[in-house]
Image 1 (cartoon, rainbow, N blue to C red):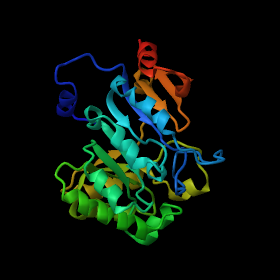
Image 2 (image 1 turned 180 degrees about the vertical axis):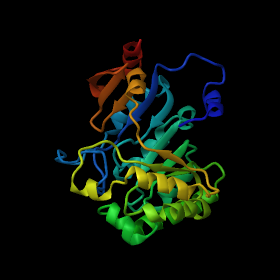
Image 3 (image 1 turned 90 degrees about the vertical axis):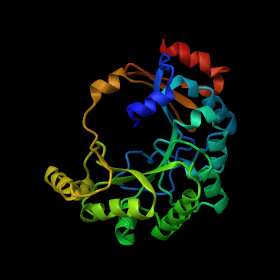
Length: 291
């Protein structure tokens, strides 16, 4: 996620790193669309839960425990939370530089929200985009309207272009059979039209293979062809195929908070769950837990 020079800026005095590699936080348990390739399981959601402000205030007390990154959203869509922009603005300035969130950019964002986003000075925003072909886009982003997405994107990039300190925009495209042929053009459009500073072609997570996956997941040969097609591109990109990194996961320490305030703390591969709402002072609790 971060280059070596970025890490030095985050830790300029070579202080001992914070005890957790990163902190993940979801302010809601739901999404406004249902993409068939999504790794989140929505089957058991009875109702949408929005994290209360009092719980988010406790999350903020944990931020100094995260060494690298604060994921303001991880598995769900943050823009559907009615206090989405307010919560982002609550993050102390000293932690904004390692804060990011991921969005499908489908829910219509008011101009005021976009303007406030442009002045946040967070690290970056991940924007999911599988294609700029409306038919392909809507076939993969179930429930999304391309017109709403592109309207948000155009207004957001116009506002960000006016502010040199606006968050960086990083685009993520899932690689599937339906969009395989036009991914090089998607990459080009993001850089030429929509202020891309990074682009990631992402493979699918390991999950049970059903009929849809059989018809849409790409083969190793198709991956190889995509890589050949991308080679002439002058634009910066990376490919993430979610190779097995079990050994790396065993050594990570991280905190993940869900919309209810339930905290899954992973210490060298062992996960335990705690209720953040019942802990008066979460900072020393989770600091000592990592020792």
